[in-house]
Image (cartoon, rainbow, N blue to C red):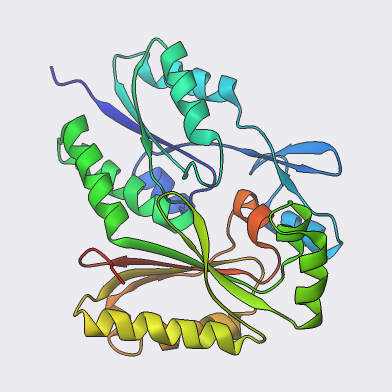
Length: 288
């Protein structure tokens, strides 16, 4: 009898309810802290409620991942002898990968933990690929290799419109934050293997439009079409999102899977109001 494999991820992932049900994904909720109170993502605070807190000037902090919830989930999923693959957000952004590994060592189940080096829809690309591989009867080793290949075809850039969360979170100094407000600085950051790096900056949203033009041009020059585009956002107006889509996908957009949804509270703590995650999955590895 073939041992089954079950897929687990964390709540920074950008999956629709339909995808979670279709692929039988277990999602471990992470937590955010607001004004000294810890809220469990999706259980005690919604994405819209987090936006309302940001609008009110209540800036969140990330909270330690729940070790016990990982252990409980591993034990429950593995009780029937199933193997578990946990695919979690990048260690650049969170301690979740370390927690998931520690929990795996504490569980009776056989658990393989994958550091996706990604998050949001980029994490979902790997989770969905893994779930399809399970349905196809692939081994754990084959699934791990596939997730690595998906990572190299994925790019995550975040258009940061408001630097308040970066200042409050201590990622830039308050003095620098005050200066950037004076000149209305906008930045684009890219999630890389070992770091989160600023790749573009300017004084208006035109910076974002120009950067998205560069994305479209790069894919066209490399003959490397985008297969999936996500514009995960923090309450960004739909018209602006539509404009970004039209720039990134100037042709054949009907052939590309597209998703525009609010991102998770976990990601909102890093990015702030009106941020947009431009997340692409390309046919081939995406290189500069």
